[in-house]
Image (cartoon, rainbow, N blue to C red; front, side, top):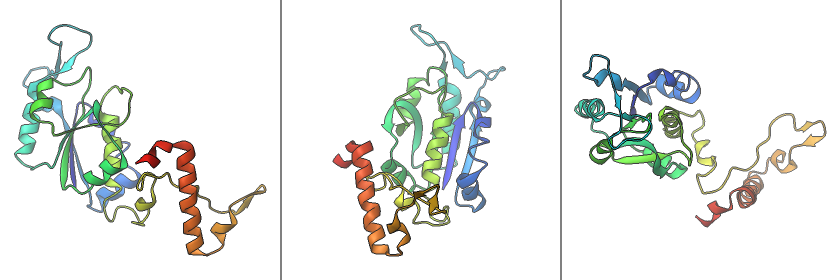
Length: 225
């Protein structure tokens, strides 16, 4: 899978993409992640990428020209399955969406900043808008890192145990059951005996019951789905 990310601040991805699952996916050649600085497509002497909004109002708007030039150049090299813009009014990112995106060969992510991007970019270039929650961030970079992590970890071969992702929360509209590890008894706080029994059938039954109970208590709306 190839993921191209357009941003004004590529250095913000140094941490998230240099460790753990994302690093492993890149080293195995399972994910190619490319960062492109939108300023490189600005024709101005000072690499300007924002301007005041027409009609007035506070804040600045990312200009159409550098973004359009950037997307058009990259589309000339890659036939993207999706061109994604991270926006508070996009479709909410959930596990089902991550699953669908993980089946793509490639996609492009545009990170907004300031008061957002010129609307004409959304009208003529964007194929999918995504939100990671009902709140506002300073820019799309953190959201892009979240989206990338959610998708890349699902690629076959990325996780050491590929069944691990199948038991994650939300995969079947249930929260994951509680988990325990050694020691089985810590300060008198004991792990459930069923998990130490070796009875795979009963353990699976217990885990499923715990998932339903936890979901009913903490996220009952998921059960309606």
